[in-house]
Length: 230
Image (cartoon, rainbow, N blue to C red; front, side, top):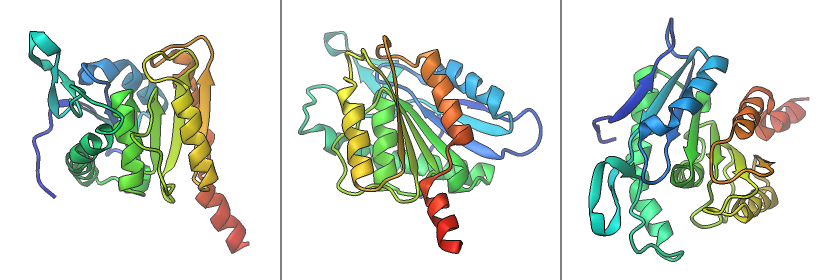
């Protein structure tokens, strides 16, 4: 594991060591501060958790106006197509894996007690992380995201929560439906929540559903283990 310098925002518990870890990945052309409202909403419910909001690995290329060091992205979208997206995501994955593992080690948090949360491009990274590193985190929350490519195998040790706006014009809701259908077909552990009249945003209704899923959703593997034990 290559040690890397963390750039972004970190929120720690008010007292005592962290009991859970949330890693929040922003969308393209944004920065870690964009997810502070979501982090604070989660922190109210999970006060014992540590929250890590990293900045994207690359400067955001704004086209003719050049690149911005303040605005970031996880992988370049310049000239990107459906065919080139998977390779760009895969190229960025090792750095994200190192970042998550370092945070878990530093806070002494188990993989099962870690949630990887993404919005838009960050959600693409989070969803693909669940496939590339199954069990590397206990939960993945995808706000307005999609898989780079629909998976051939569902994660066995990571629960995926898909949250999407019905009127999303950037990443259409059809991608969320397709992801959920594929994961359930492959007997993966997934949930899907769609907010009507909501676009490409982290809407309060979706945040409420995410919190509800985190608080009440027992992973399918836990039910299966209980049944087997019985």
